[in-house]
Length: 246
Image 1 (cartoon, rainbow, N blue to C red):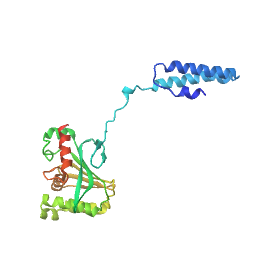
Image 2: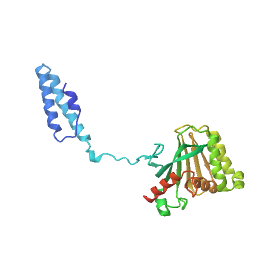
Image 3: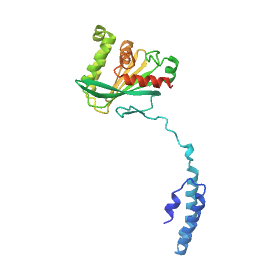
Image 4: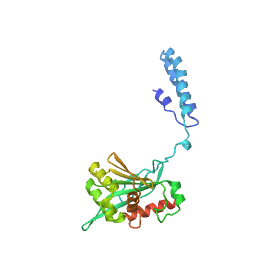
């Protein structure tokens, strides 16, 4: 009955004494019962266990810190990783769509940036300044058809690119086809918009990805979230506050 207590090793500086007492008590009990051969072999075995336990004990002060603390969007409760692919999350907000008299929460959105690049740009008021790496992550809080999502995005891109340029752009057609193929966006699914370089855009949804080489489309797409007339003012406010803290 005393063996489990020997194996449950703690970090107390006095633990070794009590474990030794329990071990000797256990051995004495086995000797009394006539199990001397087992008793003689039990002592070194238990001592070995004790040494292993002490060698692997780690003070609480040495415990690993959570370097990827979650960022929570307060309105929806959606959580985002603190870092993704070396990029730091600087804030999150909610996208609300007005349908008739009702305001509906559609998704939570977070912004990730290359922290060094963002600090070098030194402009927390205009998040379109500089060519540092940025990534927008959208997490749906309701089911949305891919065509519906693309339709809303197209309505935001068209005035930013100019109607004629948008309709004639091969890049915008490629993005449209991607969302058609991605299928329905379920509650909890994510859409990623990754602006790696001035002319390199990577979009992901439902486990699929597409790379599009277009500075015009990438600029217009990120202006939807970071520009002067964003689709989510609360999100932009959160992003700016996060950039200021870098």
